[in-house]
Length: 316
Image (cartoon, rainbow, N blue to C red; front, side, top):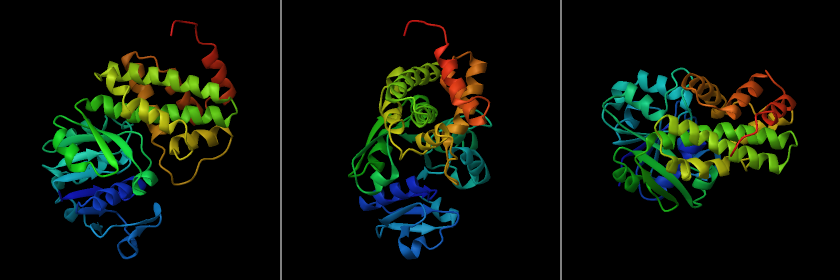
């Protein structure tokens, strides 16, 4: 199978390009500023140490990349809507698979709705689940969920020797699982960074999972989806590894340090978007609300702990 383009040459987009090309696909990798990636056959800035297979073509020409029938959108979620609106004419009829995790802070939309709104003739899909770019590029086994109205053709087109895709038609559940777990990962990082201990992290992950499920079900998702790879699986990975950008950001925040510059932390914007949507929908989201307050500096870590511990006692 050939004809796959990846829009966005960050670490994850690059890793997908390497895995797909290594498995026999012809892959076009689009970057706004490709620099010397084509000559070096490596993304030295975002994913150093992994050479591109011969089947990867690097380009800055969006019209060339848009010719593929399957487009993987590996842009930061907060940039995706504007990008698609600007270039909608190029993406009129392809399958657009969003690989970003989050909720648009300006509109409260998830990836599938962003695609439908900007490119109504395209076929929306969502790829999500527990994965680190470095593992995918190294050929290590990774399982993800591919959600679409008719996911089976895309499941077969995008599975590789090391990426096993499970299909789902619950796009809302898959995209919300991937978005909401980043908020809990920030909270978990804060707990560890502040020295609150592993028990506190376990409690945050457990109550965070309940919060994720509550919010997702209120928006039409299936609880079973949140129990799968794109929910519980991704939550487990991102709350327990410093390779997770959101966990690492929370860890630095809990230690009173500044996070790394130039790193996309989708959980920050997602927490704000989720908190706003939840208030309007009457959904209780105490962890998301506290992450917003902590990130903005409205409360300290000590205050946040006291707020959580002073919540009314209730059944689990």
